[in-house]
Image (cartoon, rainbow, N blue to C red; front, top):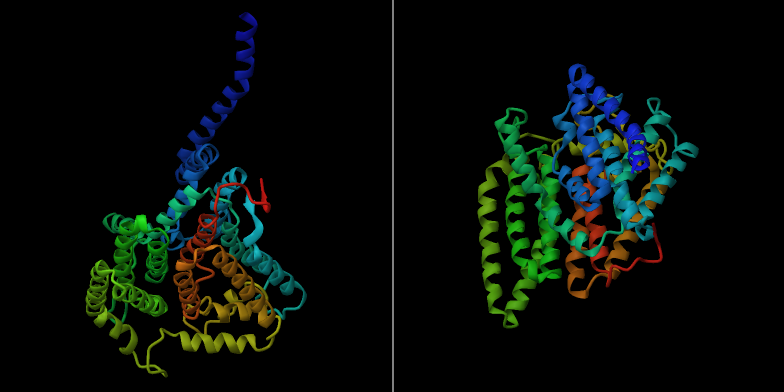
Length: 448
């Protein structure tokens, strides 16, 4: 008994010292650097949860994508941009998920394409004068991290829950945005110089539109794939559709047109085959479309036709930006200007908001030339095909239209390099692939 007590005290001594040192550290930090101290405590709590309940942390990480943290927090920390720190933090939090669930490299093609782009950058690209090695490495890490979410071998029930969370993200952004408005931290609405009023929630309008695009397109697939949860996905589809319209962002609206038209065709076809109950969603959908159009018609006119431009429709400076970046890339068409070089290409000629061209095809052509951009596109197509093969036949048409919408959307915005687009997109593809598997048994390609 005596030995046990002494043994316990001896074993407890290092832990007691550790707790004392931590208490002194945080006590001092609260006095001199309260923000850093609070952030450190929260990070320790999150790391503890990530080890004990990794699936809960995955839900938390997903919810964080509903907030454009880089537009809410100015400056940098420890010499790094807030957005870069955010990406590194979510990867760190998800490491326990990777260790518990294992990694599946079957969908890893885009990561290897990014590796090839980095190799091309240091061997064949013709760099701009402003380009540096650190820019290339930082761009590689930042662009590759979202593709890591394709690798985690989630359990099926966790994957299904994550899909439902992805569809909730626009509502989360709107809710947090209202709280930030009440606290006078961030405006819930964005009023443009044209007079157009746009909902932005806890983001900027374009980022909320990316979340809403996912929140509209995914329910179309899930209603077909999971009929037992049809009511849940129909409700979110309607709410997210109105959020998307409220952002006044035209790119995702146009990108969703093929899927919406096919939905009407599919419902009408089933109705004509005798499924009379489908008349309710058919008529309801048409009514909502009409209401949405009349609600935002004035805003869309202001954004598209109020300002005189060289083109008939105002593209918010995109046509000028696309021409500028294409001209800059002309000096190295095959191997590009180097990964990340597009971010330093604007010499002040363009509006400062065009850090990148708002067109992912031009962006990766600029960085990697024909070779790099084609490699990345082929890698994405490989992932799309593998997920397509795993899906049930009735869902495949909606899935293909979802991908078509994403590729169309990529012509007018930064879909592959914005957190609010690429993380939910990659996460959903992985969950869709995992949910389409017959069992939870580990695959051959899973590494634990």
